[in-house]
Image (cartoon, rainbow, N blue to C red; front, side, top):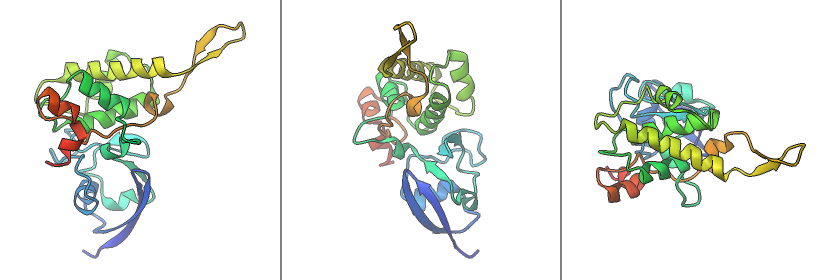
Length: 207
């Protein structure tokens, strides 16, 4: 099949990518752009390992054809890195030691980031619902839920207060891009040990 030019914004940078139009976006990201955070899991969009943000929404990239990315704003886990600082969700994953093998972590993080942008103060049920499309075979789901709750709480505490009509401080609303300035890309998370978790993204890219 003839290769075509696909124009998209990837991690904040406008890119022109030459690829086969029906190639999975996952392959384009990993092979053509060298972004190894999204992982191949099932190939049919059911496990969540390949999740990225497309237009701000978390979705699978293994079954998303490259031609459909034309004009889209795409963010991978690497794109969450901001000025060397991890995104609050990824920092919470490290703090809660929520990664085991780390293979599913990038997809989990992208789903959590999308959730907190839309709903900065989710409860456990809402978090579990948002992560329903992300499978973790290591059994760390409860830690992941705690990590998302932690990120939401820290983001809420960091938001400035504003004075209401009576002069009382009212919590500022809004997700503030997931509750804080977008921070670090853990490159899909940690690899088993606590120390591996603390260097989540950087080790993921080497796999």
